[in-house]
Image (cartoon, rainbow, N blue to C red; front, side, top):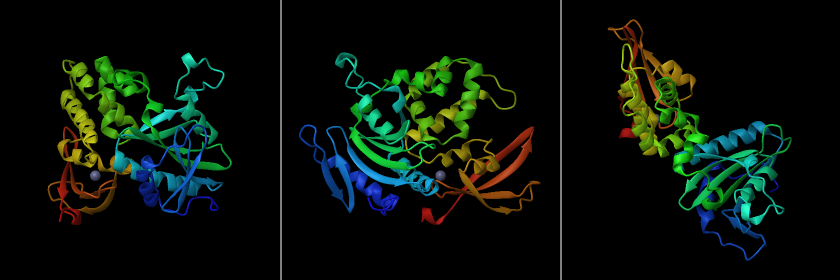
Length: 309
Ligand SMILES: [Zn+2]
């Protein structure tokens, strides 16, 4: 790579990644060189590697990889994080106790990264490795490898890696209530993916918990939080949850970068003007009325946009 960051756009890189699972595998220990749509990479016995960058321009790389992450989330939805610090077996390790995750982990560490995001894609995993903050020359690469190399916990074990799953499964009111509000606030795939995989177990664990609630029942908040997880699992944009709950404050949603407030229009019924919000993920637009009835509430109504025609 002569340039510090590949000249291909993140969109073009996505198109290359889509083709990488079809690349041939080498015999034995050799590396195969390949080129797809002008991008060059290599394949070992373990994985196809597409180098993206080796640069001192941290801001440019961050912009590039965040766009790529956004595209990958759109395409594959479920995102996991691989912790490369956990798997450090090497040639000296007794083969009987060797954890095969050590092989990809060592490649992640060789790019000065401690961890990496990855997306399941059929039998394969697509992993985006980006050097940690401290690295002077930051590198980035996409790895495509059979996901068996990353196979970690079975679904029942998500509680050990996701604090929110553990909170829900506890069935303890004082843990379930903060957990459901955390779900209400987030669109982060790394938070939502383990929840989606554990949804049935969570529904069972919380079915008979007495959650109480003063003005609006916490049971209905819980049902809504789990609906959000189900929407995420069905790849439906989470803005579609707004109309069915009263506590989505548009200012907070904008602060979280979920929506943009485009406009304010007077509402003769209310002291506060309605806000016109646009979802930053899918472009849906909503008119949001704010009112008071014991507590502040918001009513989100979708307004027709070009994307509906
Ligand atoms: Zn949306």
